[in-house]
View 1 (cartoon, rainbow, N blue to C red):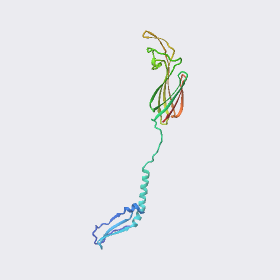
View 2 (cartoon, rainbow, N blue to C red):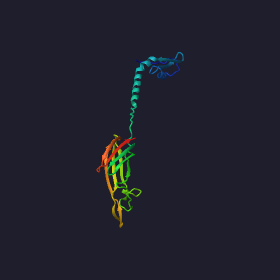
View 3 (cartoon, one colour):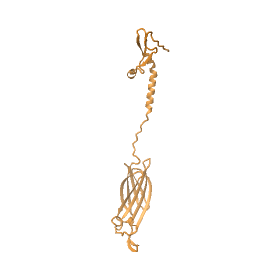
Length: 234
């Protein structure tokens, strides 16, 4: 359908008709595009006439509705969904416990805290079989079998390292070193004869994988020493 707008005679307005959209109706009224108002010349009265073409607005409503629906669909898919995850960070603190049961080295237990990728060292000391005895400073390997008081001691050194994998399990490497004094024997040092205990040492490195939910993992060394390890992430 074709419509022609003609300006009435005698009007002081410009010849072209102007079309305005009432956007206030768009926001609050039921009509989607609002009413279309034609402003034309009125030659007889020297003024202006306003004609409300509601039918035109109703005719355009379906097209406007489709545009609005399309806009809503685009807006709904523009923002991606948010996935919430609750996990303990793999580089967080690891609380671990090492228990030792051994005829040669005794029974001990230690609980410590490290982080993934770190290395931790600790030492157990106890009286050696047969009791403690003084050790001269000049005796060889005195540092391994004597404590700060200058008497013999049995000691076990543990080096523990763990790396947490993506599945939460710990890849563990543990080094065991044990030192205990044997009975003193005559030793000549710098021309002097001394009674020095000798170092009876043992060392072994183990490598294993274990969970970090608190379950225990047991490892038996070649000398029969049993080490039980448990780990949990805080």
